[in-house]
Length: 210
Length: 165
Image (cartoon, rainbow over all chains, first blue to last red; front, side, top):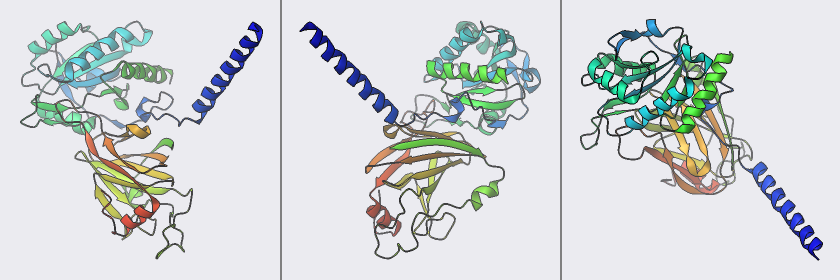
């Protein structure tokens, strides 16, 4: 009797598994942003030359970053909205990447979209609080028009003055952007999630294999 | 629902202007014929992001884009059900995400590039067109609606007999 019950349970189990497999096969192919597909790193554009100042007071721009692979985001230190999460995720990315052999070729760049307030001193304190490695993660300041132009035209990411009723004085994109050693954009990623960081990790592996 | 994503690089801006859609309406399907669509022949629709608005260009009765009977909509994407839809995504300024979570539709639009999204809906409905949230913008980034219509209603909308909202 027990043997028969066991047989029925096995048959039912196999049937359930078969149904689940069929449903899975019939399920629509999940869609990803193409920028997150590590098998296909497109070139989304090449950044224009820029020259800004990092949180250590040193020049940082095209000249200093050429030959490095870097991940960029746009933040500002008095931002009450997404920036704290963005900075946390960049910190996690630093932790995730720093054990890799390619780390010496990688830089993390956080552009301030509020450079009038975010002076070198302010950014230096902010970098310390964020746990930034001073030789890998730079917070950049400079003329606001230069940084906004770089965001809009170079990175193709919106930035501007927020509506008067908004909690934040500025709006900007919370994306992370992967830039290769030639200064070309190779991917846009969610800058506020572990999934975004994982996708950057996969894209970097692809990039360094090339 | 079926869905497929792809992309191609625009070599020259003129390419998008000269892009010709596959015909969707059979030559003998004018007038009162309300079942004019050729099954499995995609309807190509251009969707262009600009200043955080979607500008949507549907082909008219001739089934071909860049002709006089095209219909330009802002914020509203009208599609017939049970017909393959081929979206061609452009952007005139920034990176946008085109997303309809209810149907797992997601693709990006990037200046100077062309991305495509193929899908087919099997039921009518009205769905929000979501875009990635911007920091500093409180309201959800909804850039319009996807209006999935019966083929009959879609034809009526093409003919201006239905507002389609």
